[in-house]
Image 1: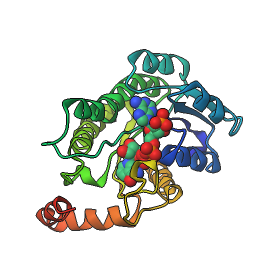
Image 2: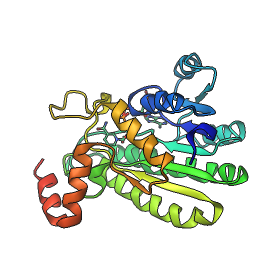
Image 3: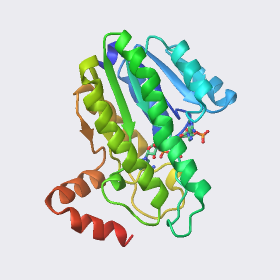
Image 4: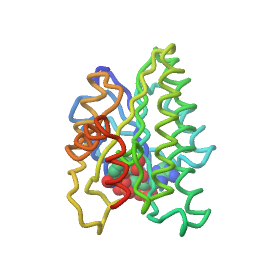
Length: 240
Ligand SMILES: NC(=O)c1ccc[n+]([C@@H]2O[C@H](COP(=O)([O-])OP(=O)(O)OC[C@H]3O[C@@H](n4cnc5c(N)ncnc54)[C@H](OP(=O)(O)O)[C@@H]3O)[C@@H](O)[C@H]2O)c1
C-alpha cells in the first residue's frame, strides 16, 4: 500500500514501538494518523506532534471506546494493532487474572479492533491491518507463558482474518519482532533492537505488501532456524 495516501490508526501510540510507528509513518508522508492512548493526557500530547495526528482515547479492551473510534475514524485504511501487555510468569505460577489480562489486550483487543475496522477499511475501498505478534508466537518461552499463548492465538487470528478479508481487498500482516528496547523489556539484560529500526521495517513491510514481517536481525535469524528445524528453536526458547 502507498503510505502517502494511507489514513492510519495506531493503538498504544503513546510510547514504545507504537510511538516510533507514528514517527515513521509521519516521515513517510502518511496522509493522516489517529493515534490511540489510554489516557486523555496521552491522547492530548499525541495531538501536539503534527497537524496530521489526531489523538484518540482508546483502550482496546473497552468495547464502547472501540465502537467510538470506529464511528469517529471513518476514513481509516491502515489499522496497526500495536497495543500489548506482557506479565512475565510460568503457567504453573500464573494467576488466572494474569492470563485473562494477556488475552484481553493481545488477542480480544486486536480482534475487536480488526472486526470494527474491517468494515471501515472495506467501505474506503480496501487497505491493510497489521498485527504486532512476537517471534515467541512461533515457539514459546515458558517464563512468559500467558503472553506467548495470547500472541500465538493472535497469530492464528491473523491467518484467519487474512483469508477472510482478502475478498474485501484488505491485506492482513503479521509482525514477529524479537527483543525490542522499550519499557516492555525494561531491566531484561539481553541485546534489543531500537524501536525506531523496528518501526522502519514494519512500515517498509506495509509499503511492499508483505504478509509476514520479521523486523529485526534476531527475529529473522530465529525464523530462518525455525524454518529449517522448528524443534531446535522450541528447545532453545524453552531454556531461556
Ligand atoms: N518490546 C519487545 O521486545 C516486543 C517484542 C515482540 C513484540 N512486541 C509487541 O509490540 C507491541 C508494542 O510493544 P512495546 O514494546 O512498544 O510495549 P510498551 O513499551 O510496553 O508499550 C505498550 C503500549 O501498549 C499500550 N497498551 C497496553 N494495553 C493497552 C490497552 N488495553 N489498550 C490500548 N493500549 C494499550 C500501552 O499504553 P499505556 O502507556 O497506557 O500502558 C503502551 O502504549 C506489543 O504488542 C508487544 O507485544 C514487543
